[in-house]
Length: 171
Image (cartoon, helix red, strand yellow):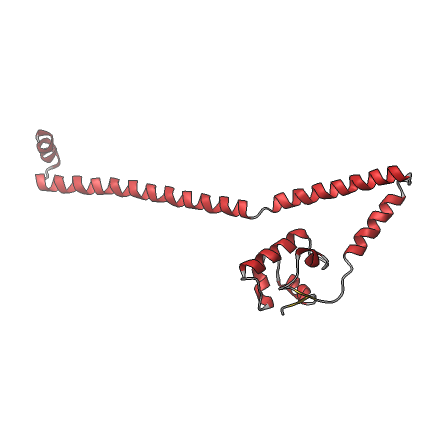
């Protein structure tokens, strides 16, 4: 108590005023500590959200697997070319004809019943976009009712939506 009395005399304050100031300073320090703890908790929640988003979208993995598959098919074509004794100039022609034949599609398909392979036949829809569309359809309960719902799919904007309307029916 002697310390409190000395402080009261030096500051010209009563004991009650010093007690009140001490309590207010204590609450100020406590408030700063609580605010810091809350900001740490918010940062932790945001880090978890980012991690789940990163692992949810496995685009990088799918692109790597596509590149690996393409590399394997190129190696197979080279091996077949070597085995059959064809010249290297004939092999690229066959590969370019194959890729142009793949994307020729006319007509419409029922989106609610289509598989990934059918979706990939549509020009501009690759394996990643087809997977996104299938995932979106599954999230919608297996059925899409309106074309505007496709705008929720990553990579589908107004232009892409108008393009997809030509090929999809929502039966």
